[in-house]
Image 1 (cartoon, rainbow, N blue to C red):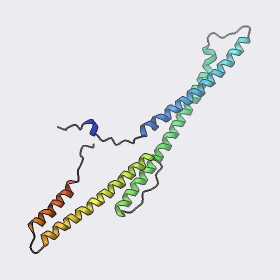
Image 2 (tube, helix red, strand yellow):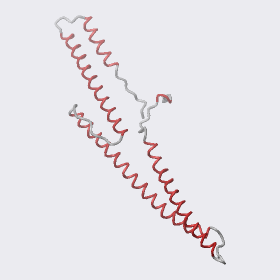
Image 3 (cartoon, helix red, strand yellow):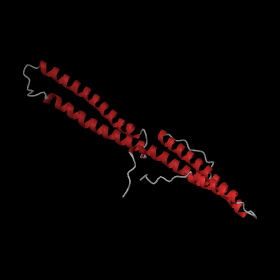
Length: 190
């Protein structure tokens, strides 16, 4: 049976500002659409009402006859405009995100072969932070690898000595165990 990780220790692999920007653009687009549509409907209805008020015998049965055509225009044109805006926005957003993530992936592949490869210039703040985290992690892992190699060489040198000193072997082994004990594998991330 799996043991649940407490909420405070869970790891969420989601961009920090992603939800805010992702939800803010459609809301701003909707507010802009409503403002433009409201002005359009108000002007059309106001003009029609002024016209009808000067006619001696008006044939208008309900106000919807005056407001309806302007509302339909605003809904059709505004709805199509909003869909086009959101589509273009989504394409541009994901294209930029994909470009930055591809640059990070290529950089990590290069860094695996040549450790001194500089980090690429990235446009997205969260992707830049992700790349910085990868770089810190790679440097930490490289330093740990060098320390492990040194500890192994030290243990090997003590064991290869013509007459190994048990205390020196224990000390070299303890150094190797301390080095190995610093690594922790977190299998709770799914």
